[in-house]
Image 1 (tube, rainbow, N blue to C red):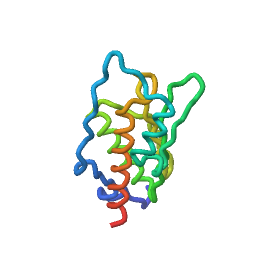
Image 2: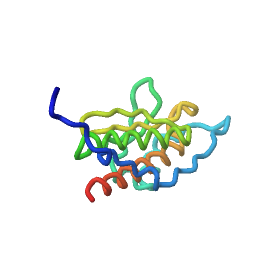
Image 3: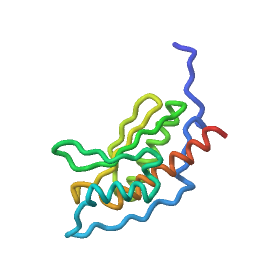
Image 4: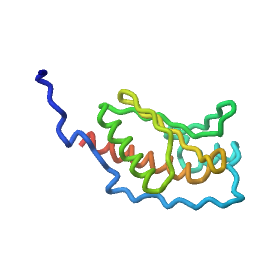
Length: 140
C-alpha cells in the first residue's frame, strides 16, 4: 500500500453554483447554421476571439468553435469539465470535451443546424465565465 492519499475535497472547485445558467433559444424548424463569416464576426463582437475561441472547419464535418483551456492542476481541469458538463446537461446543449493533463478542449456546434448556432456562442461565453470563476477560486 502506498502512503499517497486522496486529495482533500476542496481540491474539487465548483464555481457553477454561483453562475446563472444562460438562457438558450429554442431551435426553429427552418433555422440554419450561422454563416462562417458571421461566426467570425460574432466571436469578435462577443469577445470570444480574445479569449482564444476559433472557428474550426474539418472536411466533411459541421463547423465548430473550439478553445483550449490550461490549468495549473489536473483536478482544476476535472472540476472545470464537471461544471461545463453540469451546465450543458441543465440546458440540454452539450459540447465535445477533451480532458488531458492540465488542459481541457471544448468544441461547440449544433447538430440540428449542422454548424454553429447562437446557443453555441452563448455556451462558449458561459464556458469562459466558468473558467474565470474557477481560476479565481483556485488562486485564492
